[in-house]
Image 1: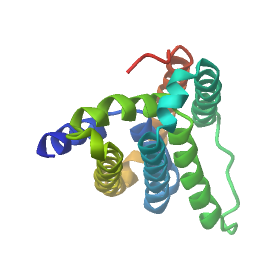
Image 2: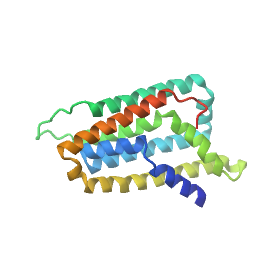
Image 3: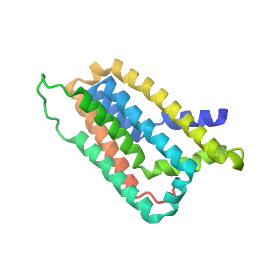
Image 4: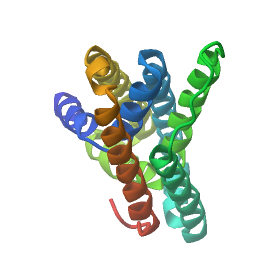
Length: 203
């Protein structure tokens, strides 16, 4: 279990799509939106946990049609998010309050980006089983490890959002914000394009 926790921390803390999305949302809409995005991503991880425990992920990987369909949908969605980040932002009236809408949207973006990424399903199938100690309780072990992964993820994301929040004022300067938005957009588009060429047998 200790080895699993250590390896999971390395995986969770490594930069990737989740980090890019949380950075983008926290910078654009503040700490609450960042937390909503983190919650959505974590909910997606729990969805993959349940799928892996029930064997649905294995079915997804074995089915070329199902994998390709979800792969393309997920890739297009990531590219959409990246292009959105690259496009000029419209200035909204100061009196218009859209906090709750943005927060719901942040949760939805995080949830969909995670659920529609077949590489996450492949990761859960290749990473978690290595720490299963008994085939008799494989489903329980997978579920518990998936929940642990989700817990460690949300803890790291919360810490990360807090750190971003404290330096947000400096990062929100026009020059830095423009660079950050473009860099994040390029990263998301890059991940989306990479996902298009992901094969079902990749880990």
